[in-house]
Length: 294
Ligand code: B12
Image 1 (cartoon, rainbow, N blue to C red):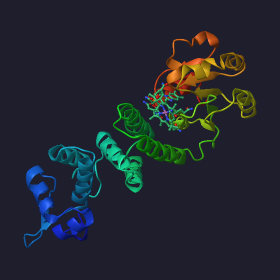
Image 2 (image 1 turned 120 degrees about the vertical axis):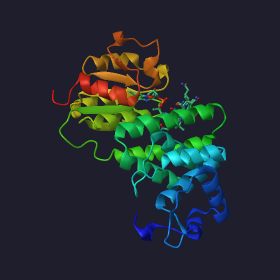
Image 3 (image 1 turned 135 degrees about the vertical axis):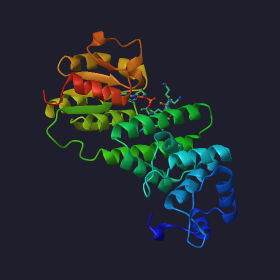
Image 4 (image 1 turned 120 degrees about the horizontal axis):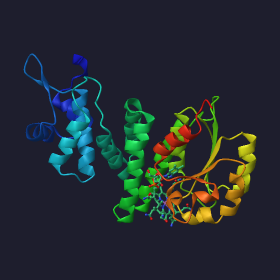
């Protein structure tokens, strides 16, 4: 560790916004800080110490008890690789939750930046972002997260995912057309699916929410789609247009994802491929059904 990166307690306090007394208490009680010693015996703190204090504050703000918050912060930021934190998906998910819950957009973006730096896309989506959204929905149902928190969080996560989607239409791989069925606004799962399919060499043509079925035929034909993947939460969004979809399925491969795909009322008999699993696993399945080189 370069000496010029080390901080005295006063500087650590200033940068972290935690008093020197409290920092010493956290060091003593929970071993949160691991200072080096100067030749004169002064305690010198590393950037990892500062990061652990930040993470500890986030967990405290999220309602964890101090000992628990310290344990999470210690496991999230280790000393194993100096200057580079070892980041664990569960700890980062807790940090993301804490930042989004208190409407802290810059901090949430920082956590997402770290994730992008250390994790594969499948891990980012499958182990952090999608479980986070699922959990957010459950907290919302139980009245533990407000509508404002849910809107704020889903807008940030969705925006970030669309940022990753830039240029997902480029290349020479097979084309998938993605759209939400009429009336459907929930498109985050579909975007995740598109990103995962892109990572497997496909090109994506994304039509977004609330797409009229009659447009699909034209687009699928124009871009020579290998598959059209539609998404909906409610099964009735599919049944309402089932006849049109069956017609379309005679000319193109049509798949349905999202919660609606699990409904008993939909059968494979309609000619639709039902993607009943999560977006990453189903992207893998679609890629295998129709390999990029084929
Ligand atoms: C974010 C969100 C919104 C956002 C959507 C933003 C956006 N652009 O997507 C907004 C605020 C717009 C919204 C609106 C509404 N929402 Co909403 N929303 C959610 C929330 C919190 C998260 C949804 C999400 O993206 N999850 C991430 C996905 C990936 O996870 P998932 O939904 O569990 O999906 C699983 C599978 O189905 C699959 N999957 C999902 N999509 C896809 C796509 C493909 C291709 C594949 C292969 C797989 C797949 O992956 C997941 C498993 O890993 C959920 C809560 C929840 N429990 O899910 C409610 C939820 C889906 N919403 C709900 C409701 C009721 C609504 C509204 C009617 C609320 C209202 N009164 O206005 C409106 C409807 C708008 C409309 N016409 O579609 C209900 C649906 C209940 C139901 N089954 O009938 C839920 C479940 C909340 C609840 N418990 O009440 N919502």
